[in-house]
Amino acid sequence: MSLIVAKFGGTSVATTDRIKNVAQRLVRMKNEGNQVVAVVSAMGKTTDDLVSMCEALNPNPPAREMDRLLSTGEQVSMTLLAMAIEALGVHAMSFTGRQAGIQTDGIHEKAKIVSVDNERIMKCIHDDGIAVVAGFQGIDHNGDITTLGRGGSDTTAVAVAYGLGADECQIFSDVVGVYTADPRVCPHAHKLDEISYDDMLELSAAGSGVLQMRAVEFARKYNVVIHSRSAFSEEPGTLVKETTMEKSVITGIAHDTSEVKVTVRGVPDITGVAGRLFQVLSASNVSVDMIIQGTAADGLADISFTCPAKDVATAKAALDELLPELGAQEVYVNENIAKVSLVGTGMKSSPGVAAKAFSTLAEHEISILAISTSPIRLSVVVGKDECAKAVQCLHTAFGMDVEEIFEENALSPEEVEAKKNKGR
Ligand code: ADP
Ligand code: ASP
Ligand code: MG
Image (cartoon, rainbow, N blue to C red; front, top):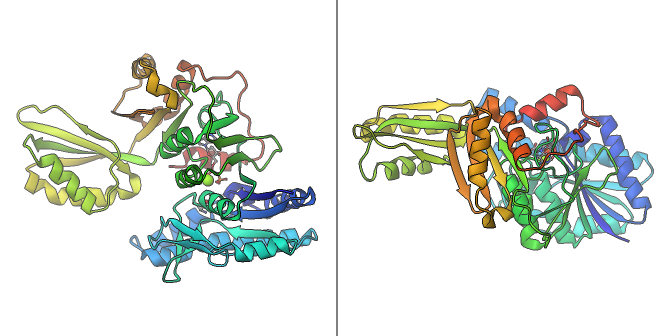
């Protein structure tokens, strides 16, 4: 008998029919002799809709209230799923983050799990039931509800699997596993049978929405093997684990359309100016990603950086206020950008990746607006309209294309479009 933690994402529980399918799958797992704990996300776009409603009322909502609001989405799906399982004649109980003993720190909207007390989940499975846990939420030391950052149900699943000492942590979504690139953007991408924690972490950090970065971090720290697979097929997916496999130079390509590029023009080329600029951004809690300083002409230079689109209003306001002190000319925001990243632990020992990437982009007449590197990642910023083309041509150039074309097996055309446009 195995103890399986099975997490189902928003698309997999988007409708009552899909919840019924998930219930059937969980009951099948149980009837095969396993103990089963499910973790669920909110139905479909529920969390986005809750965010929009809040934005219509208050552009700066109190974080505590925001978390209370967002946590309601998972409470709907968990109860519906428990009811659907009961309708199949199997005992099921749903648990909020609090009831599942998920204790977090007090940082609202991106809380970290500090401990999991599995007592009630254990009791449910020992009573021959299926436990259904609300993903994405926990409780802080004040007893207030916290959430774990967008996509955080993945982290709930890994933490619950670790806490229970589960034999398997299966994360079900709408694709068969982790591909060499988002298959909806790069149809010739292929599914990886396995991927190392390091490569997966870098792909998630660079914008691959398939697994939340925190979940991979948690899994690496506690050695939890994640099986990323499809809710719409029985095919085996991708194992995320410590692997000793021979490393290929590039494991995959990630893209991220959720950032913007901010340029402060005409900054006097004087020591200390950059320090002051980034100090102000940091004090305003703007997460700066890539930084580009142009060469100075006539004693003036441009300083550019990328940051999440959600931080841009704050960044612009802080910098506009700083312009007179710096003696700089203007702040310009380019929202039409995308970051494309080549990732691979094998890159460390292979020179020439940058040369090949840049010449490939040049051959396809794609201009590079910014560059950043780490030992296992090379990122370029390109125009948003050229993002898909950049991912595709790099995928081909680094020999990752397969002949077979990715085919949708479950989603509606509207859902596919929403996924393609999702800023990560
Ligand atoms: P869920 O709602 O189930 O958590 P997500 O939307 O968060 O699912 O993650 C699945 C989506 O991730 C896929 O639909 C796919 O478009 C996208 N994706 C991005 N990069 C990759 C990749 N490398 N491999 C597979 N899917 C990816
Ligand atoms: N419902 C949350 C979100 O949309 C958490 C999750 O889906 O994992 O981000
Ligand atoms: Mg997800």
